[in-house]
Length: 117
Image (cartoon, one colour):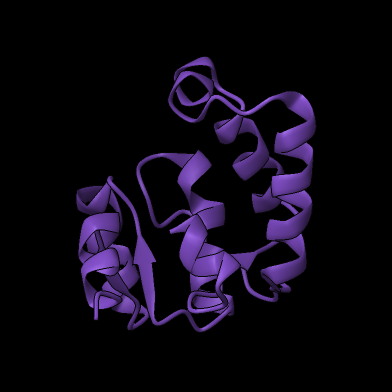
């Protein structure tokens, strides 16, 4: 998905609460093993990501909608940013609440499939 963002084919939505979460996730040991990026490379990646992301102001808080309070900021970004879809491996926890707000919930694999030529 990051390559789609870099090619400007996919525009992620971010809020001031959500961006630090993205930074935290990409720096987790299991993710660092997968991507192998240095701290400097991660800084450049996240700076580029921030420049290409669409900032979203959260005007309405509809909490609680989800069982995991940490997931609420993801749903709020999708709703307030009028997202076409919310891509997550945790589809089950988001599905009912997101559909109430007309936000599709798809896995990253399904989203990537939609961008194949």
